[in-house]
Image (cartoon, rainbow, N blue to C red; front, top):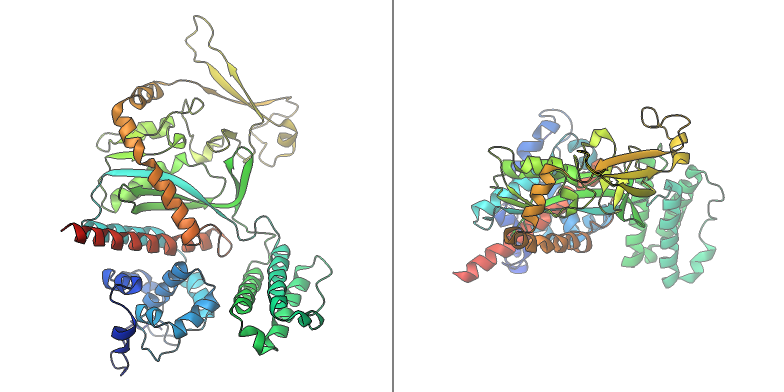
Length: 493
């Protein structure tokens, strides 16, 4: 049963917040800037009006997710921090003496209340509206890019992941009490995941039987991480690894296993839209989606700046659509031509980072050759990509793609199109060069998101979990940026 949260004004200790939470504290500033009632309106349909126990208001539950993104803590450590941190309690609209929720409530909130909610779009649109209202988002220049997030499992099975977490627990315990080696249970000896889970549970029980160890913050944090991994593994037990993560490429020889967050942000470094995908997806096809989301949020799109991944023919045509025209400052790559990034469901997609094409099964071409244009012919020169036939022979997607008995598998593209010829001329102009100078800003934003806000690695498994993580992280990053711009604007007056 849902009850709307009200400020605990009847507490005799509310005045403490004025004494211990500074006026310029980030969480106080965030609380004053954002009217979080929109969260209640978006999520109230996920609760019953008259059945069950009274539920914690979704506004407060969502604020817990913001604090998790802000502090990079596990659920259990976050709840423990809330119990003693007055700034956290103030942000959550709690009375100073009020107890925090049970950490399992956060898991329930994520899995049950946020399903089928376009949370990422809702939150980013809200931050854009705030930025426009505050007069700190005025530019029509947007910058687009994608950043990767490593899977929680990193191509490890759930058993391997649990074994790694358990090893870190033991290693940390030994730093304080090496004699615990004799007390710990015997390690799992088989590849059975259930045996590994039971071992981890006994390991945790053994440590909890020695309360003095849990007084050590380093030990407690590692134990809580292991507990979450066990819970997550039991929930996802029917998967051999992260079910939605895929292999993507940062360069031809450098791959990663995980997800991509496709971003577009304004010249003021405010993220206006985003999309979360598995790691193998190419960047270019998401340009239109990101631009349209930005427009719906209220941004007047005049120009979009991106790298070579966004200069495909489809994107060039989109930038010239009547009534929606904008300058696309994306440099051409000699192999992104004749249709550029084909629609995702048509299979072969250019991978800018690996500098080659990937087939529908995400295998990269192993070789490429140029077929020159014949003298007097109207046909363009072609670039041919050759795939490993031995892989094609056993590929589950070979039907309609590979012909049985064929000794080669080739994907060919033209090296010139009318649209690319026009873009080539624009690329040489001073206007293009001036626009392209701002592209470095999104590289810095990607670094901030990953290194300062924990987006380098997924907190849970599955695409849904990654979307929730991105929602809280990007919302927090945007609000921090808006507060900084408001302060700079105030200094100018």
